[in-house]
Image (cartoon, rainbow, N blue to C red; front, side, top):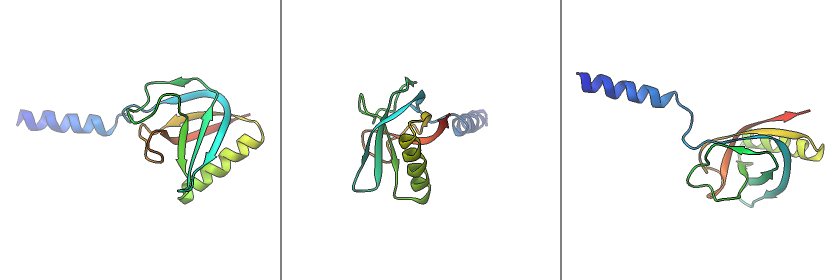
Length: 113
């Protein structure tokens, strides 16, 4: 019984924790936007990255998002608007490389005025 209770507590704690290896980036400008043929958009950012990137993330790479979904298309639109207006953004990562094999996927970003 005690083992089952301990296992349930562990599962519950894992469910509410942040993604393993997710990073964020402080205020910075968007640079080097690349639109890939599968709909992925990869870009770099001048803000300082915090945390440890996931193991799949290659050293020196930026961020990725999928333009193949409606949500991703909304992110691409906002990203390119911020890029065109030379606005800084703050980034929160996903902790995985779901959109491009060696680049951490973007969870969300905030445009800074």
